[in-house]
Length: 581
Image 1: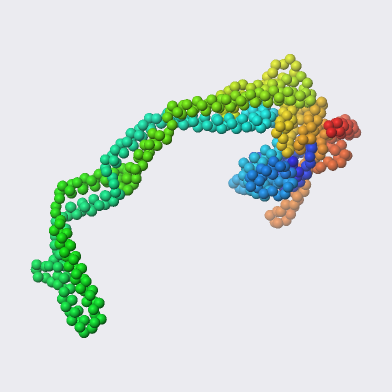
Image 2 (image 1 turned 45 degrees about the vertical axis):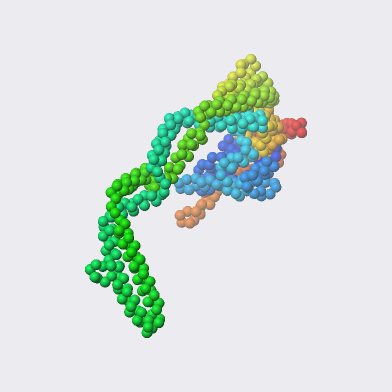
């Protein structure tokens, strides 16, 4: 339950700290006193929409902090989310709403850990349920009616809805795949034709080694320059070994140097190493001359081979342009084509297989929907009986209620359109609730519905915001008793104008507006007094304070009449509580 609420610079609230207790907590005050601001703060701290209007004028930051008692379910959820527990008794949720020149920024924390809006929304489901008068509009919305009925059906319906969700998603996936398969059948054939052509072209090119093109280009240069290579080979041979013009060759010069060094070694043996090097160089030069001569003699023009090489180079370059840019990449692509063709032929299911699977998925989905419909019918029969009983206790003796379930096309939520049918008066036919119920009837219906759902989907705190507007007398008394009954199972916070409801409270808070003087700095750094309006909340913890507030709510011809009436309400409420206990 909500134990402490701290608010700072929120709407008309300057600073406020409230301590709530178990049972029925009631907030009263004149119209416009700011009662709903307290509930707005609870909504905001639990992820409600943030706006600049929520930040008190003249400030740039609003802070709300709510402390809840720690239940077993909440503790387990916090551990699952990786959020440390402060202690065994409480969990603290806070939110800062900060204004800047251009935007608004909001930060939420659980036990001091920064969390996103989704996490806060999940936690809210465990802690608080807020019911406002405007929520009666939702009764006419089929989706909301479905959620209410399914909540009443509890875990079994929830599990079946999950089964339907899985079946619906599977059917949707198979249907989309089937449609895609049908649409792409021609594209697939075209792709296979293209790959077959590419496979034939690359296979016919006889690609083996990635360096073939480089080798062919070297061979082309040799074949295309045979004469020049022969001439240059002969020239090098002459320079190294044998020159017909009697010009000394490299070998001749090295031979002369060898003779001189041999003579020098006779005088200085340390020159032997140099002599050895010259001898080795002479042998190397002779071998080089022999090989270059042999190379030149082996060269011969081969026009036919030159044409073959030119043709092969052109072929390989074309392959590289289409499948490369390198020959190595073209070979890799060639090797991948067969794999891709095999995948196209084998990995995708045939249209016939998919059509069969689609029919099977549809059958499973419709069967799951039929089971959910039966569960909903069973839950609706029970809800009809229980809700009529609750409505009769709310002074609607002649009421008739029926949950109308009509089959529709299966969706992720099942295959039912659900409507609450209602007749408040004897002899009147059942019609959609939203079409015929008055405001007071809507309020009582919603309260009775919450009472029914509460029994199967209990939250820590239920909040009711002015749901008793427009009712009086016996109906108001019935609403007060129902709120008290609900509060015996969980904490209830209620904003009310009804003295009958307020008299039933376990804790009573008076909300009022107050004008205060506040210091404000001037341009000259002086201070002056500024009047500001704040919301003030007073806990009415004595009988006299409660009596006065109830008298104020009730009004009357004289103050004494109102006080007497307030006393009667408190006495009546005390007597009712004793009876319930």
